[in-house]
Structures are given as structure tokens and as C-alpha cells.
Image (cartoon, rainbow, N blue to C red; front, side):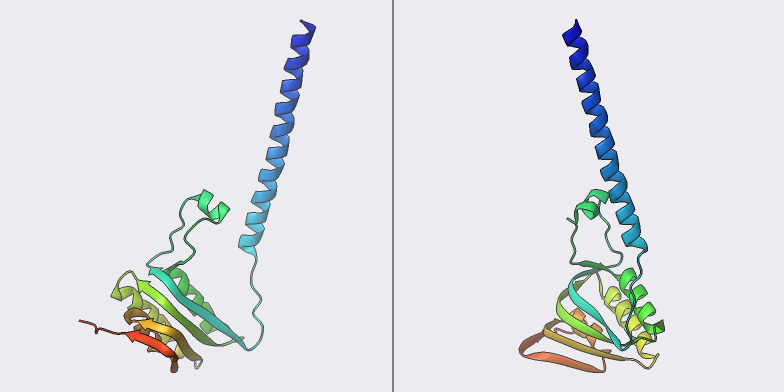
Length: 167
């Protein structure tokens, strides 16, 4: 009987220690996520806002499951139009940002309306007197349409433009 109580007490102590250690990891992770979410970026003077148009631009960024975000397993190439427009608006109102550099790539948009809204946000950015420059190795139709608002558009010497027309 003495052996039974000894093993039962050892099991209960082991479970208690496991719960305490797991709780500490959970609290540390939670504090880290909250701290990283509330951190703000300090923009230095004469900065350039870089927008990498590579991947898919959706109406809204897909958050996925909380586990995907925690493990960083979500599709990082999918951008949300609402996030892009918000960042462009913040860049317009920030005096330290002097312009936008559009780095093009193989970009697809949910719809032509998505490309139109992004282009309109960039056009609104230009009203602040700041510049926009675009560069890509190749432009697909939607990306070229968005880049057409730029002051200068550059294309790699061996690049290509896939433009079939907006029909």
C-alpha cells in the first residue's frame, strides 16, 4: 500500500510540474505576441516605402487559423488590399517617407477592381507631391496597370510585359 501512495504522489507532482512549466511558456508566448503587435516602427528621414508586388493580392488578407499565424505557416505571399491601402495612406501622411518603390513580380489580383483600387490609392499618394518608381523583371497585365501610375517605370532589359488588353 505504501508503494501505491508513493507512485500516486509522484504522478501528481509530475503533472503539477508539467502544468506550471507549460503555463509559463504560454504566458511568455502571449506576452511576446502582445509586445510585438503593439511595437511601432520608427521611420527614419528620407525613407522609401517599398511595396513588393509578388504573389496574390486579395481583397482582405487571409488570417488563417491562429495556429498557422503562431507557427508562421500561413501563405506569406498573399497580400490584403485593405492592408496595402492602409500602409499607402500612412506613407502619404508621414513626412519622413519621400516616395514609393514598386518592386514588381509575378502578381495576380482577385479582380480588375482590386488592381483599380490599389492604383487609385497610389494616385492619391502622388497628390501629396511624393514620387513613385516601379521596376520589374516582368510585368503581368494587372501589375503593369498598377505600375502605370508611377512617375517612371523600369523593366529589366531581358524582361517581358504580358499585356493582352483590358477587354
